[in-house]
Amino acid sequence: MRGADTAPAVAGPVAGTWPLVRLLLRRDRIRLPVWLLGITAVTGASANAVVGFYDTPAKRAGYAATVQDSAVSRLFGGIPRDADTMGGIISIEVTAVAAVAAAFMVIFLVVRHTRGEEESGRAELLRATVVGRHAALTATLLVAVGASAVLGALLAAILLTAGVSVDAAVLFGAGMVGTGLVFTAVAAVVAQLAGRARRALGLASGVVLVAFLVRGYGAIDETWWTWASPFGWQDELRPFGDEARWWPLGVSLLTAAVVGALAAWLAAHRDFGAGLLAERPGSARGSASLGTSVGLAWRQQRGLWLSWVVGLVVLGATFGGMSREVRTMIASNPEIAEVVLGAIDDVVLGYLAYVVNFTGVVVGAYAVVSALRMRHEEAGGQTELVLATGVSRLRWMLGWVVVTWGATVSVLALAGLATGLTYGLVDDDLGQVDDLFRATLATAPAALLLASVVALLHGWLPRWAAWAWLPVVWAGIQAYLGDLLDFPEWVRGLSPYHHLALLPAEELALTPALVQLGIAVVLTAVGVVGLLRRDLG
Image 1 (cartoon, rainbow, N blue to C red):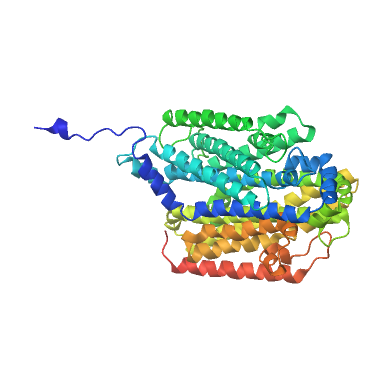
Image 2: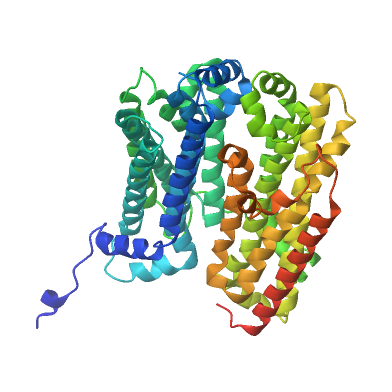
């Protein structure tokens, strides 16, 4: 008898880590390069556009004079150090976008491969093999760390094309690595706390928002609050000036190590498949509305809707409250006026048109997130359970479409109301509330068109539904950097928002709005036909 000799060995806590790393890289072989190359391309294009735009000492001096006393610039761009130099302007213009994008890249990666895998049940299948308890978390952290390192190297390399010195480019890239590591650890912690991937993403996104606002608050008065945010640590490297320093990078690395260790400890002290934050129990009796496809879809969407409403109302109120300062800031710098206003002559109307367009793009992102819930429900098996009750595929999908469209319009309405109300209070003209409310609602056709792309892909190519993010990303680049990058007209036209009137600075143009609504209806209908004809899964 050799039973004792043939008994399987107990797997160590990180056994199977490297095979899992290879599996993760294979699964993200498209998604991860898109993130890396997209962030790099936007950063490089922005840096080179700054070099071409502020090409004289007079322009750089005007820029410095404008941003030095501007709370708006400090909130979004940080403390304006060396703002009269090319490197300083590049830092102010590109750091925030690159850092926030890097944070979201690793957050989506970590949550997807930790909490998302447990929620789907795939992680349990892996653990049935010779895979250690902490192998999945370890593999995910290794991939996220590697992605952050690659991003830092790419950003350093792309900045060299803008004429940045090697030392400055390397320090900037290293800072982005540090930012990625911190939010990798943050995502790992919230993945242990939340019981569902959606909740984990919401918590991690909230941390990003708070960190960004704390950094901005500290930058306005140059207080210690800057040091309370990972984004502030990136700024404190000061890579493009004469005071460049490496030691703030140590703060990022130490924080990442401590928070990462906390994530590992939490993972070891919770039940597999469960989060440490208990899910709120549902009602003993469901409401009558849950018996309808629309009611069920709304029940699953209302938390997402509420979180976006809060965020966009705060954003709208912030934009509206800044209108008075923007009048002074833009009027004093013709170069910034050219970027923000384009061909619009009125300073405030041009700013408000920019705000309305930007808000519309953000709500377009919400529309895509909302519509993608259809894919998540089907992939998770919940759709089959609903259809087993006698609900038709047509009713099921139309329920989600109705909720997505209605929620998108309501988010736009509330964001526009917040912008108009704060602008009216600051400018002592509440008559502007209705104008901004209508202007923001007028971007609804573009947002609904983006949602219809999800419906089309979900109906025919469900595994490709996530590609609906591409037009959203492009619309965001066009809204935020389009005039600075000076795209050709046909390239600008790839964004649906480009075809809408720039309200309230221009007159409402019904034709492009109606055309976009018509296209959205057609794409959605084609998507429904696709769902009716294909197998689920």
